[in-house]
Image 1 (tube, rainbow, N blue to C red):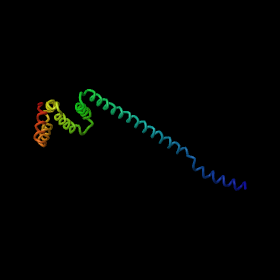
Image 2 (image 1 turned 90 degrees about the horizontal axis):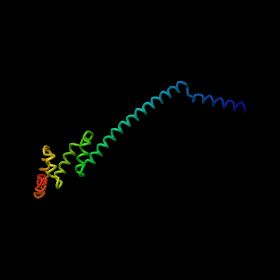
Image 3 (image 1 turned 135 degrees about the vertical axis):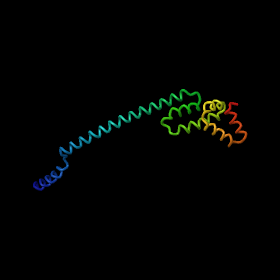
Image 4 (image 1 turned 60 degrees about the horizontal axis):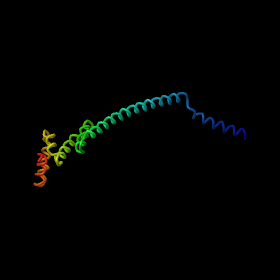
Amino acid sequence: MKKLLLVVMVLLLSGCASLVPTQEQITSLENDLESLNKAIDKKQVEAKTTFGEFQSKIDGINKAIQASDTVLEAAQNVNKATAPINPYSGVIDNVLGIVAALTVGGGAMAYKKNKDSGKIIANINKIAAESSPEEGKKIIAAVNGK
C-alpha cells in the first residue's frame, strides 16, 4: 500500500513540475509587466493632458456665459468660444443671428452686428417673405429697429 501511495505521489508531482515557471518565463513576464506599466503611465499622462485641455475649454465657456447680459448673447458668446472645436459654429452663428434679428427689441442691434453677413439678411428676408404679409412686415420692422 505504501508503494502504491508513493507511485501515485511521484506521478502527481511529476505532472506538477511542468506547472512551475522557468526563469525564462519569469523574465518574459517581468518584461511584459514593465511594458504594460509604461503603457499605462503614458495613457495616464495623455488623459491628464486631455482633461486639462477640456477644463480650459470649459473655463472659456463659463467666462463667455458670465460676460453675457442675455441668454441670446450667452449663446452667441458660447458659440464663438467653441468655434475652434465645433464644426457647426458657422451654421449656429447664422441661426443665432436670425434669432437675434427676430427678437423684439434686438432686431436693430442684430441687424447692425450682422449687416456684413449677406446670408443672415437673406435668411431674414426669406423668413419674412414666407410669413404672412402682416408677420413679414413685423419682421422687417424689427430688423430695421421700428
